[in-house]
Structures are given as C-alpha cells and as structure tokens.
Length: 183
Length: 293
Image (cartoon, rainbow over all chains, first blue to last red; front, side):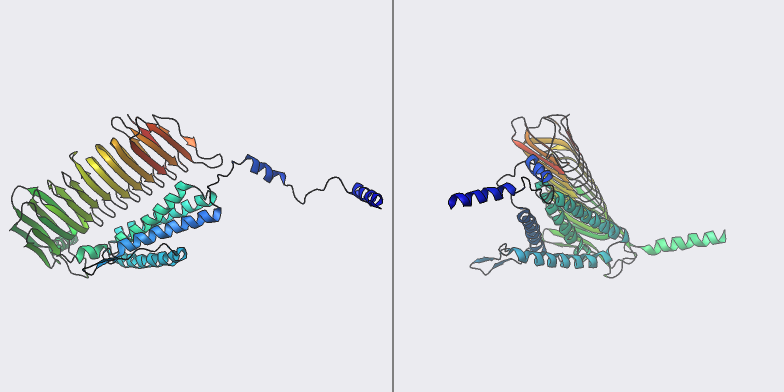
C-alpha cells in the first residue's frame, strides 16, 4: 500500500512543470539590493527618521519661541524657592500645534510691524523671508531624496530657526525703538 | 522761467518746513557711565571724548515733539521724541559726544548710526540704516535689518555679535569671539585672530580671512552662498567640511570625497597639525574654498 502510494506521488510530481515564471521580473530589484551598501544596524527606519526630524524642528522652534517670547515669565521666585517651568518634550505630538501657534503669533506680530516699516525695508524683509522659506523648501526637497542625510536635517532645523528668529526680530522692532520704557 | 522759480521757492519752503529746531545741549556725566541714544529717522553720530559730559548737537525735523536729554545717576538718555502716528518731517541729525569710556546703546529705525572712539560696551541697532563702529576693548552687539553693519577692531579680544538681514556684515581686525549672521547679505571677517567664530548666512557669501588660534573653533554655514576660508598663519584643527550640492576646493589636506555613490554631496575630513582646534563648514548649494596662504 505504501509502495503504491509512493509511486502515485512520484508520477504526480513528474507531471509538474520544472519552471514557474514569476508574475514580474524580480531580478532588477534583487541586483539593486545586492549592489546597495549594507544598512548599518544603528540606522533608524524612514518613518523614525522623519519623526525625529519633525521632533527636532518642533522642539527647537518651540524652545526658541518660548525663550524669546518672554524671558522673564518661566522663572518665578516666591522668595523661598525658585520655580522653573520647563519646556515639555514628553508629548511629541503636542509640539506640532504649539509650533504652529507660535508661528502664527509671530506671523501676526510681523505683519503688524511690517505696516510700520518704511516701504523699502518692508520689501527687504519680505524678500528675505521668501529667501529663507525658499531655502526651507529646497532643503525639504533634498531631504525627500535623502531622508537620512544629517547635513540636510541640520540645515532644515537651522532654517526654521532662522525664519522664527527673523520674524521675532522684526516683529515689534519699531515699537522697541519708539516706545522704549527706559526713556 | 517763472515756473522754475516757483518750483525752486516751493522746494526751499519744503526744505525749511522739514527742518525744525537746532539744539545744542550739554550735561555732566559719569566717566564710564551708560548713554542711551534713540532717533527714529535721520543720522546718529556718536563720538567719544575726554570730557566727563555728554553734549548733543542736533538738527531736528519740524514734526519732532522734543529732544529728551536727561541724566539719572550714571545713565544719560538722549531721545528724539516723535509723534506716534506720523513719520513725516521727523528726520533728525544728531551728533552726540560721550565720555570715551562710556557704554552706549543706540537705536534707530531709518537712521544711519556711526560710532567713533567709544571704548565701553556697544549695543547698536537700526532697522533700515547702516551701522558703522569702531571697537576697542569692550563687547559689541550690532545689527540692522536692511542696512550694512561694519565694525573695525583694534585686535583686542572682545565678544562681537553682528547680524543683518539683507545688508552686508564686514568685520575687520577683530579678535576673540565673533558670531555673525545674515540672510541675503554677505559676511566678511577680514583680519584679526579668533578663539571662536560662528558665521551663518542663507543666501549670502561668507569670507573668513583671519587667524584661527590654537584650540580655536570656526563654524561656517550657508545654504546657497559660497564659503571662502583663507587662514592667516598656521592652522591646527580637525576639519569637517561638507556640501550637499556644491564643490569643495582646498589647497592643503586631502581632496574631498563623495558622500554617497548615489548622491551629489562632497565631504572633507582631516586633521591639520595637532588638531587642537576645529573647523566645521557646510553648505547646501554653495561652493567651499579653503586655503592657508
């Protein structure tokens, strides 16, 4: 019985085709994978890297804004103990809206200030903001093609900081001159 | 002919209307006190002198409300007060003499600022004017939005912070530590000797033509501008130079290498001398040129 069963199996196997063609040509992808340098073990996944970049940008921008908005506010002394209100890094997702809010506030302040500036200076500020935003766009495009490029990540972060810094610097500029409280 | 005379007369009337009072006042002051000066539009010239007094000579615009000139302890204030909601006929030119060792804070909106022979700390800011100053042994913080910023030092160690948005920053013969930023303007450090230099632009070019001291740190960064480093004297540092899309040329050390087989970037890492200092240069699209002669 066993011998008969074995013969049937051998006969059936013999009827099978020797080659099964895949649905698509897999070789180019395999060749590419072989040629590509091996991934280093410490490298993060694409999504993790993107999240890190966003976190860095959000955190740094929020810190910059919090620091420049009111340097006196976070530190309060009651005469006995110093209460320090730290910037929170715990909730990554919360940094997005905070950054957007800070950006929107600075933008509003800037637009208000631009009305007060001489037309030439206003044009210069707008032109230079466009330059920074153009740089941000350019770096972002480059990051799309090389998301793990540390230089690009660093430059993107710096450019976001530059934008906020310029907005903060120009916003309220004439008020600081014309309404100096020490005079 | 008659029409021409009428135009000339009208112009003369306008010129007269635009100029108001001429003032010349003096107050006693501390030898090394603080002098705060503010003028919205026009020119501000500040000059150090050997007297323990502050003198203001000004040609005030006709819409200027008053010249505030007062002393409170070691602090003297000079302010051209203008109406809140009008920028017409407020152009005022003021020249202020201060004790040479004074520290000063000068602010303007559409005002050019010039400072000479003031040896104390300098804090100088204009919005659309140029800001030009000498620096001696005290720290300098100087900035403009659309104007140029120029500081000439005397090779004594100080901390210098200079920034502009669309103007150029030109710093000559400074020493110690410097931080300079521009967006579309160029940054130039010409002469001097540094423990630390941090230079950043977005679209402007960057030129460092000075000495980097032993253990000194130089950081230069531009998105689209070119970076040229020309060291005066020997340099001993670890170099970390990278451009995403620009060229890297260097007259010493090894040649730059591609960062990736598949991307356009170039990178140059090497140690010169005993490597006690550090040089870090990066650009996105700008070219980088490093030389020591």
